[in-house]
Image (cartoon, rainbow, N blue to C red; front, side, top):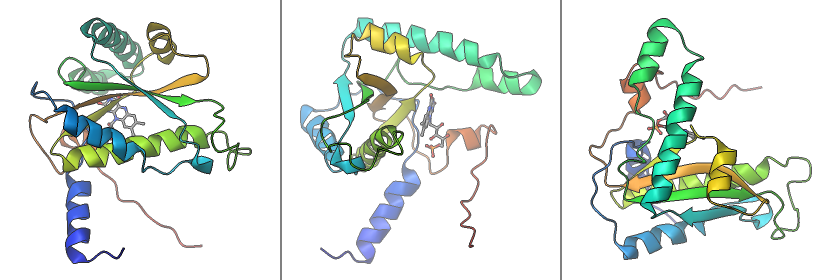
Length: 207
Ligand SMILES: Cc1cc2c(cc1C)N(C[C@H](O)[C@H](O)[C@H](O)COP(=O)(O)O)c1[nH]c(=O)[nH]c(=O)c1N2
């Protein structure tokens, strides 16, 4: 398979307009689209082809409410690290769409999967979490190409999420994902727009 300029242009557009989304419309996502999204995770790279990600789709309003309470506590606790203007700016940031997103996923990473037979991770156990991050990014791009937005939430007490969802001890919480139709689209990160952190270029220093 070879790609040409229209493919490159389309990829650039998806990359440029992929944002972390925290504002969602409540419109439901069809099961057909959800199935397509789920299948894209199968195409993600992973260490030793281990595919260590484990995903729970959380439809329960009760569980979502508990995770939102978990977020609010974690957000307040983390806010203690900031002072003055920065504390004020932090208080104004919206850092989740748990209260809005029609599709929500709890993503975990298996700590020692059989699949892959340990290949590639003996000296770098972090590669399991890295693999899950890659699957999330794959899903992120695929969601954008479906005109959906994805928001990644890490402002959470991971142990509390694991206990709430009664996951096996081998599963380590990685992230909460909110997916749905974005209230608005942008080609620039919200944290850049909000003045919290500008987008900095990636330098490749040559040695
Ligand atoms: C590992 C990890 C964890 C988080 C995030 C991302 C990643 C990669 N991001 C999203 C993050 O703020 C966002 O990616 C950057 O601000 C850049 O913006 P764009 O994603 O380019 O829009 C994020 N956003 C948020 O609102 N709440 C959160 O808890 C997190 N946590």
